Length: 147
Image (cartoon, rainbow, N blue to C red):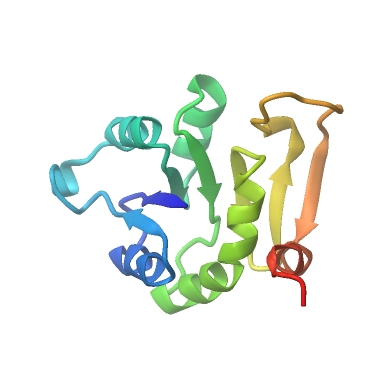
């Protein structure tokens, strides 16, 4: 999966995602460095089909009203340490990837992955969408290969 973290997330998270085998970049990386705007991030996301990872509502509003970024992962963790953010994010990466196969918007909290069904971006909806809250452990278990 391809990711693009926003400027408020540590560059270290992008490196950890790369180490886990994902294509991840951070807006502080070239070409614009720390001059990247939310519009720049949205443009890169849509052009390259990258999931934007953010902690803030600005991208949520953009996603709801303009359909940008391509896909959105919100981590409403507030001011947490980099280590705490990694401890929340990295163990759930398989479940996140699985959820993004059929959904465009996901929230990752300390206790759950929240997949609001009314924000799904599925090619064809075969059933009505309704808000769903999915426990992170259940999604992780579903993403693990069968033994």
